[in-house]
Image (cartoon, rainbow, N blue to C red; front, side):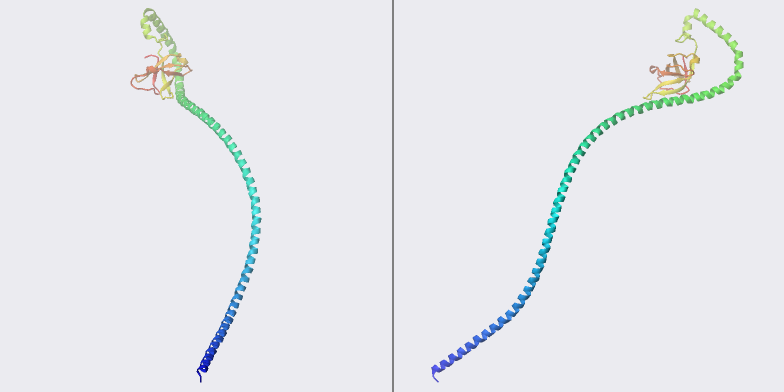
Length: 294
């Protein structure tokens, strides 16, 4: 066999092998593309189905969104109408607030006037309370005087019973007493004519020789707590006179002097003479003795 034939045979074999390789490659490639086409077609179908479902859902969502947009637009229109209504209410309430401010200013003015009136009324009330205090003190003195008068009335009633028994005896002694009085008046007249200095020493400031005695029935202090008025158990029947002075004493201890300001039937209010107080710190008490001279 010649070399050329051998070479030809080898080339033929090589070409055959190359052709077989190409055919096998093409077959394999076709099989791979077929398998890939089937798998991709299935995947594409699944994806297409999913996309269709997603598109359907999206369309439904879009419809719902459009409905929501329409509802929101309706709500917006309603809110705008409500906003206008609220703006009107705000304007109305602002006007009411202005009216209330004016009413408040007027009420403040009225309150200030009432406050001033209250202060004035408070001052008047304090004055009334002070006056009531004074009246209470006067009432206390009056009650004390009334009590003493009741006591004195009871004593007088007891004395009246005794006096009724003594009345007859007194009538018997009256003529004797009158005779003695005439003799005493004659004696005083003689002393007055013959011994005027002795008469002046015996007589008081009103030119009478009578010694008037009384008892302190009540004591009334002033607003400062100082004793100012006393009630003496002496009246018109004892011939006491307005302006007559009495000495207040207790157990031969001098206390002060008082001056009669008014004469009643059986009582005589008298004012204490401030400059006549004793130096021992003694004060007036109910039951103290009083006399026009010692």
